[in-house]
Image (cartoon, rainbow, N blue to C red; front, side, top):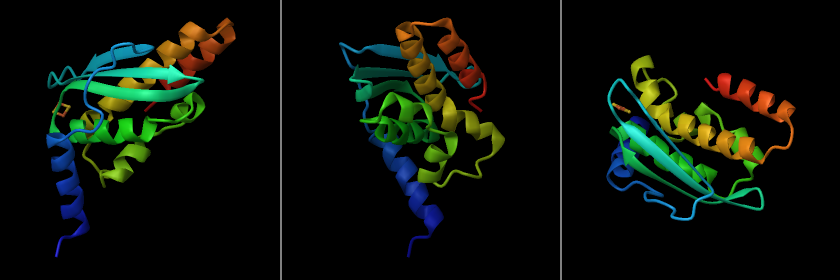
Length: 147
Ligand code: FES
């Protein structure tokens, strides 16, 4: 019989081989790229925004199994959400789905690269659609307090 840890391990391997939402959105409303300089892995996230909701989201790039699994889960959680709800997504929403709450510090960057890219894409989009500078300051503070 499989233990909980085995099931999570199988999920991570499966997502890394068959990532969800992998690809590009040609007519995206926002895209963002970032990488993990320690290992060279890199992720791009494209989003189509419609009526303040994430109508579509896709990612491409390369990463270790944990990075690819977390990006799959994150894009799945994000799809269809309002931009306000995307702002509220936290690291434990991803880590909890894959049983990674107690991940070692060195692997946390693998798990959270996609969250960093998603939030950067969101703030880029919101920043370019804001009408006052007060809103930009709020976004900057949020971005600085991500982790
Ligand atoms: Fe590079 Fe995990 S080893 S993101």
